[in-house]
Image 1 (cartoon, rainbow, N blue to C red):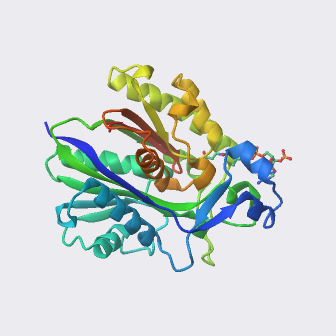
Image 2: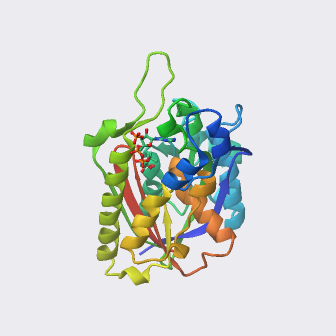
Length: 314
Ligand code: UT7
């Protein structure tokens, strides 16, 4: 059977930083409240002329370089995003143009914060089916463009960024299993309703979403371990979606894992939606924490609701 492995990782963050102190001048909040309730200190914000596809392209170039492949080897591009440059064409086709990867299929997927886990799932199944050999999977979002900076319960959370991996066909097992779910019944607890004037922004019932996220991620941990007959101690690293450090702590507790085995970037990145897992992965690969052969559990929960996990031997 053909397996798939992560051949390289990359990421990109816009230059501008929005700190909690900056937010204190914009809404009725404090650095202390934000840090205590979320673990966030700062987040990056895209420049006015910087598109989601620009962030995605920069991350993709880093991943291609780290994998040591030629652009022509890429035979599928998947971008997980909720904030495309335009309604169409897809961000994936814009990335294809910008990196010069002509004539491979390219499409976006929209599973909000779970988008990257959905992306790995789709890519590894394309590889398993023999339809692809070298897939560029990107998570990229510019949530600052759909954030209401007068809503203090919401605007403190989001940041912009992009992360990418090259997933290649391999004889060795890299992706061990993926598990993806959705339940549209919770539509209005976390959504961006359409407004007539075009100023569509994120609306979230924060505390209710928080509770759902913790409980659902508990279940996805059980599901992933049971599917592979594995124990909690078999996981070397938790590489979670970065929504709130208190959610990360709850999942670490469920795994009997100390926080130094959890890749935490929410303090510096905020919640970058589909970009958060590949950004965290690339951060910990590049700083030498995550090493080849180690087992990583990636998991996410987001709007829809959608949720899922990917268990990967790096
Ligand atoms: O990535 C997709 C999934 N998303 C998530 O998982 C996010 C889940 N939710 C959360 O992370 C948290 O619910 C929030 C960070 C959004 C909010 O934290 P919370 O501990 O649930 O606070 P809360 O909404 O229950 O509000 C507590 C209090 C309220 O005041 P009262 O009613 O107790 O007087 C809020 O008005 O905190 C107040 N508050 C703030 N105070 C200062 C809300 N936002 C702020 C703020 N600064 N920015």
